[in-house]
Image (cartoon, rainbow, N blue to C red; front, top):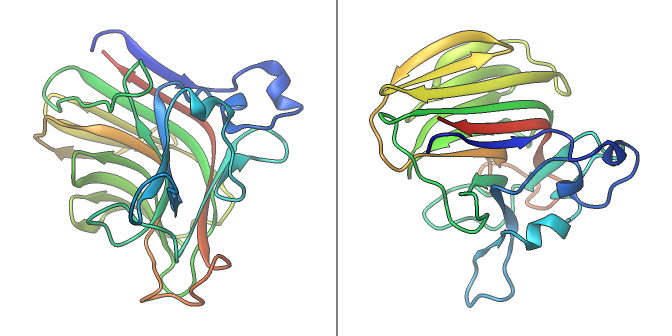
Amino acid sequence: MPGLTASAGPANASSQKACTYPAQVLNLSRWKEQLPIDDPSQSGTQVLQIVQPRLNTYVLSPWFKPTSSCDGIQFRNAVDGVKTPNTTYARSELREMKADGTTEAIWSSNVGTHTMVIEQAINHLPNTKQQVVVGQIHDGNDRSTFRLDGSSLYITRDNDTHYKLVTSNYVLGTRFQAKFVVSNGSIKAYYNGTLMTTIPVIFTTGYFKAGVYTQANCTNSSPCDSSNYGQNTIYSLSVSHS
C-alpha cells in the first residue's frame, strides 16, 4: 500500500477552541470506532461500531468524546461494557480502515513498512485488576500492545503480557509517545522515541488499533457498573504504509 498515510493531528485550528465531535479534533477518516455499548439496530447483543461518514459527526459521552480543551479524544470503557465476540473484555477503541473509511484494513508483516504513532495519556484504571491496553497491532490475535498494569507499562508479545518492561513508575495522566513499526517480518516498538524491543512476527492480516481496551470485567473487578472503568486520552495519532 505505497504512499498511504492516515494522519490524525489537529483537524483544524478552530478545533483547539471549540468542538463537538472527536473528528473535529483528530482526523478519523481511516478509522472506525468500536464502543462498549449494545447496537440497537442489530439482533442480539453486539457492540456498536461507528464507520465513516457517520463517524465525522459522532460523539457518545463519556465513552468517546473530545476533551474539554479540544486537544484530544477521551476513550472510556467500563467493566460492564458490551464485548466483541470471542473476547473477555470490552473496549472503546479505533480500528484501522482503508481509505474509503468503510472497509477494514489488512496488511502483511513481510510486505512494506507499516507505522503507527500515538501520543496519549492513560487517565484512569479499573479497580482490583488495574490493567488497560492503549495501542495494538492485531491480526485476529494481539500481536503486540502497550499495556499498563498498575504503575508498570509493558510492551506485550502475543500472550506474554509482561514481555518488555518500559517503566515501572508510570503516573496516570502522563503523556507519552507509543510507536510501532512493522517491516521485514518484525515489530519495532518505541517509547518516547527510544527503541525498546524488536519482535519477530509473520502475519498477513494485520491492522492497528488505538483507544482503551480495559483488561477487567465484572468477574474480577467491582463494582459492576459504569463507575468502574479504564480511560485513555489520545492527543495525536498517525498511521502510514509504504
